[in-house]
Length: 271
Image (cartoon, rainbow, N blue to C red):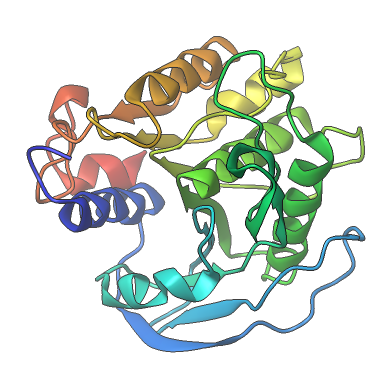
């Protein structure tokens, strides 16, 4: 990263999440195992331990935070605990351990299988749907008045964007109904898997109302910036009008986005 360090960059992105949701408070540092949820869908994949970072104040939003490949849910809890974000409960699941083709079949925690980052790579729809179902199961326990969101880093970012497309299309890749009403998706240094977003009129309406924040370092040497840029183009063409793509030069310390003409928090809250 250039301009600002990775931790500061992530903090700025997180601050934008806070403003976008329009809620104010401080997060409690408690983290514990996540309880069982209603059976929205069954999974044959074995997911790891889930941690929860609970809010100190009034609980107004829940965001599932999705880690990168080879990490665990607990990898991010300290960072999330340190954020001055308001009234958000963070759910931090751990992906299944599975062989990953990109690493020559080496087993590691991964939300889905990846062959390579080329446009011709085969999408692991079964793995994507299994993880999206797991995420939906966790969010299904939240109260009706709680705003729901998904966010992630690297592969977790790809998973968050896949969930967003499932919400808009109203179904998973396998055709089963997607049950969660997402209010926000945040993708940090990732990409959009499955260029399957061919929106109907109803799907386009949902897409226009779902805010998506994409942040991608312009000199990222793991997931190149062009993947974030292409993802933004695909989503925008599918009807995601409320979308921001920011490189590290766009994010500044107070979490505003200069290039998008947002001058203060109040404007974000109104939106």
